[in-house]
Length: 73
Image 1 (spheres, rainbow, N blue to C red):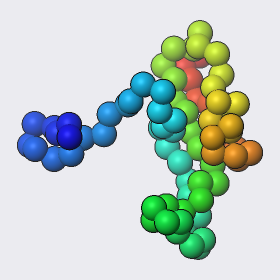
Image 2 (cartoon, rainbow, N blue to C red; image 1 turned 180 degrees about the vertical axis):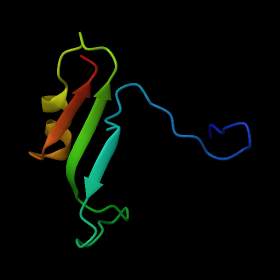
Image 3 (cartoon, rainbow, N blue to C red; image 1 turned 120 degrees about the vertical axis):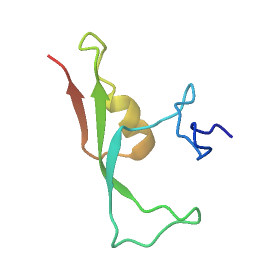
């Protein structure tokens, strides 16, 4: 487990993972077997405006939900 300086678990990106920077989920829906509720929208924040849009990448995994591609211009 990776921890921060105080010993608390720390989130980190894993190569090949599908990790949105922010997501909105439906709190009124029942949770699945892992305790997760359905994602209804997502946000990908990119500092490098030259990178291609990654919306279709996330929609292949999360379904046809709105994915907002936020980047510096």
